[in-house]
Amino acid sequence: MKVNEKKRLTEREKMERRERKRHKRHDRLLDRVKQEFEDVEREKAGMAEVEVTPVAEAEYVSTVSIAVPGSIMDNAQSPELRTYLAGQIARAACIFQVDEVIVFDDCGSSNQVTDKLGTIQTNEGSTSARRCCIQLARILQYLECPQYLRKYFFPLHNDLKFTGLLNPLDSQHHLRQQSEFVFREGIVTTKPTKGNKPGAFVNVGLLNDVLVDTKLDPNLRVTVKLPAGADLKSKKLRGKVVPPSQPRQETGIYWGYTVRIANSLSQVFTKSPYKGGYDMTIGTSDRGKNVHELQPASLSYQHALIVFGGVLGLEPALDNDQKLNVDTVEDLFEEYLNTVPTQGSRTIRTEEAILISMAALGDKLKPVNAPKPFTSFEAIPQSQDTGIKQYAFNEKRTKMDPMEALKSGRPVPIARPNVELSQPAPPPVDKYGDMSRFD
Image (cartoon, rainbow, N blue to C red; front, side, top):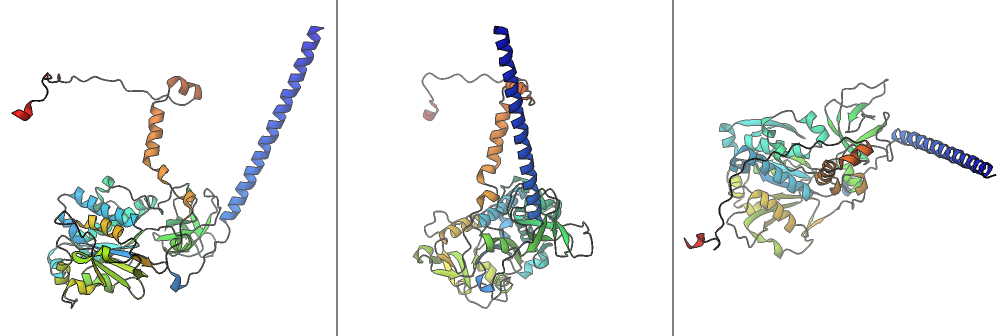
């Protein structure tokens, strides 16, 4: 009687087990169908038409430009320090969301004849300038460029030899492959398009190139807008080329800076890329007006320009420029300010002056059209995505328990043998303590 009861219980358990397996297969099938449906929807979204909101010229976001002399590179004592100096300027421009960095020659055209000249590609085309200006501009361009595009735009060059020592900008427009932001920087490839429709393929740092509906020349850097909610791994991703100012205009994100070279101080003002030039010009000097005497939000601007001097200030730049007919440097600017009125050092270095001045002018400047507050932080890399988190993850892997690793099927890290090196014996300790101060 007990054996039959035990058999009946066993059969019941088998039926329950079969029922659970059937439910699991049903749930897996539903999840698979749901995932396939979501993939199809995301692929359709990737092929959808991209809408670009037109912006009137009067509604363009206000910009901030800074001008730095290239001669500060000659004041560095080694190639490593020259590179690091340029990296400090790039970091300051990124931190304070500067839109344009101008490298001007404050030594005059007479020195350009005797000094070695170089060339560099900017938004204005090929530009010739003194060697120090070219190197500073090239490093600034290199750091601003997203990492996945640098190998296309910056071949091996002696000016970039020590850029591996620099701190990365980690700018908001330096996106990762998994970043689901609608705007991305890219380079036009040589891949041909099918059919007779105009278009081009753009490498935007994803697994597959993006097809845009505009015929473009290869090796051109462009800004592409992708459809919202698109599958970034899709092979049929479509996009649209937009102006570089469009991401900041629509979302408020900081989209990097442009680099311009001016062969004199006057060209800083006359070759402005903005229509109408700069409506607010600010010069910095220890002879200027105390910045703290200005009222908050008293400097209204649409396109502001802040000019910094070199080792000897802005006066040598004025003396070496024959096209400027003013008596003093102060006459060139609407505001001539001293941003460190109580400095303890005799001189303020240019890279230090940029950080101090931008911080001091923060509440004094009032943009006519301020950018929108950026809110899509989940779509771009965050501070926790930087190297310190990856370093902690690697440390955790190296300290993994071998038995736990074997159970989980993960590779076991092999520790190197600890070889004790012969060290000299420590010096004897005086029982009376350190008496060298009485020698």
